[in-house]
Amino acid sequence: MNRTADGVIVTDRLLLRKWRVSDREPFARMNADPRVMEFYPACLSREESDATADRIASHFERYGFGLFAAELRENGAFAGYIGLSVPTFETHFTPCVEIGWRLAADIWGRGLATEGAAAALSYGFETLNLNETLSFTVPANLRSRRVMEKIGMRYDATGDFDHPKLPEGHPLRRHVLYRATDRAKTSSLR
Image (cartoon, rainbow, N blue to C red; front, side, top):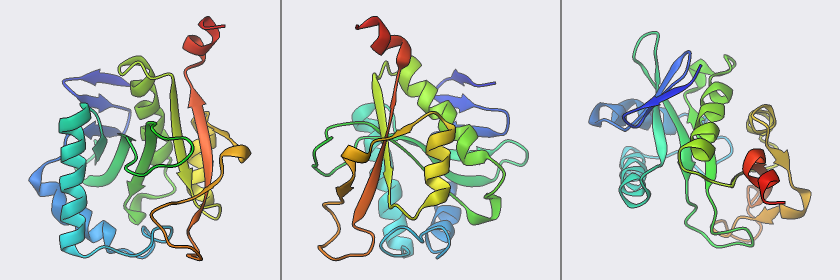
């Protein structure tokens, strides 16, 4: 069951909410974990992690939505982030809205990314009135690709791209693209 109230998305096991100052410490620990950052260019220092949190806050101010802090309902612990964002780079499919997540490794394997991402995707279609949401990752990130598929996204082989923020020859430069459309809206447009 998902419900939205006062900018908070509530699922069976998660609260997707605005960020708090107290989230920065566990966020920095998570961003310094090589398991979590396996498919990112590098682990983040505390300063880099705080700058990421600042960019997330600015995104909420600019767009009215963003990457929510994910909190475990069972104990109130910070779990990572799940939500929607507008990518800051240009490529053949931008501008767009992307769905993304990053969760602490100690809670992987419990279906939390899928649960939260499904709720965020519904929020995008039902509350933000989006027609389409995209997601992308490196081909080897099978965990995230599986989440994309579980929430109903479809792989778009014609959309694969080289990430413009990574240099030529970087092992993580190539990305796969997934798409989800609000089928109710797109079918009514036909």
